[in-house]
Length: 164
Ligand code: ZN
Image 1 (cartoon, rainbow, N blue to C red):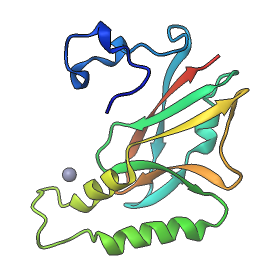
Image 2 (image 1 turned 90 degrees about the horizontal axis):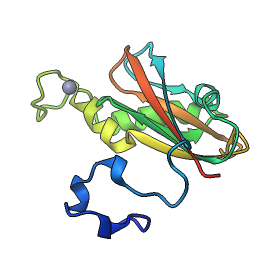
Image 3 (image 1 turned 60 degrees about the vertical axis):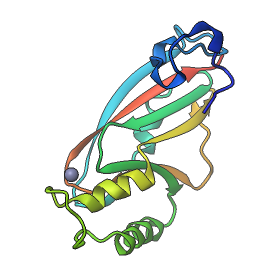
Image 4 (image 1 turned 180 degrees about the vertical axis):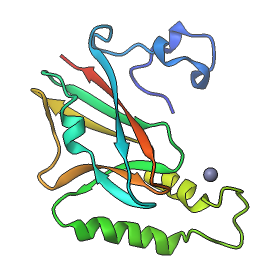
């Protein structure tokens, strides 16, 4: 994948090997990046936890994009409806019917292969734009940490890039 803002002429090594710090972005990057993290405690093996307010608390004044990332392999991050809790239970229920915890073909010794698969399907990152200090989420959207192998304490990294 070639991103349009990469200045390819500056590098000798293949694109995949370049450290992130050497990527040149089109806007001021130095002081415009904030990195933080917060922890999320899950109470059940599988659970969708609304982390929107924790993310919103990290957003600085100004406009830009917010990247959320988890360094875990058995949970995920997603954005979906925050009005009807049945949406969350339907999502977890459907994933469970699709990927049951125990399958005779699973070999992984921890017996949590289902959680690893769900984590990859859901993804470990979401990106949300913000403007004037507010997340530009839709009216019915919330940001969720999807726990697939709890209860555990999870960490969410938050990186904010100021576009002004
Ligand atoms: Zn495992």
